[in-house]
Length: 115
Length: 110
Image (cartoon, helix red, strand yellow):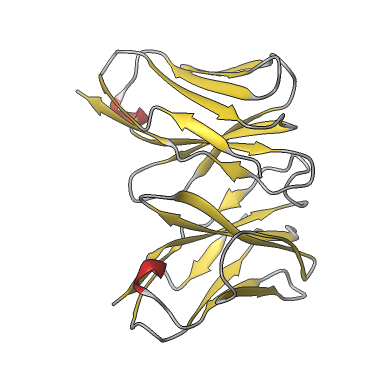
């Protein structure tokens, strides 16, 4: 079956702009989580959505937001982009929610460069 | 909050040598998971450990979960160039999301 699909794969934005990233989870998976990966900070948890509800949220400013649709697809949005937002944004899906022993499966990620 | 420390940050080995990465949590974990990320790729699930003192093997990889469920290790015997990548541990505690260590980047010199 198809894996986790993220679009776009690569994008370049200017400071102050906003960006929306999309994630389609594995069919049947109801949980979608988002991570930011940078060389210095590793994998940082942004938020998790389960059945359209935000279950957990990481320690990121309000400029980072997300949502999940009834078909489990998810989007995350970053407003007022800063240079430090340049990173690989990874989406991960799981059958149940995180913390319940479910394996999470990552997409290939969206590489965001802010100039 | 929960923190997961992973060491070493980098490891360079000659092909055929062994490799070990260690993971320590500030709190007791319900389970620990290990992931591998190849250069330019995304993290891929390797294994999950749930029981205290659990040891699991996958070919040349041996995973251990500590008795107190606060630490774990991944040992690779006789490394190969295909083992190159970054290995992450991720700890789960109750209903909280996975907390990832910063990873150990393994380089294998042929």
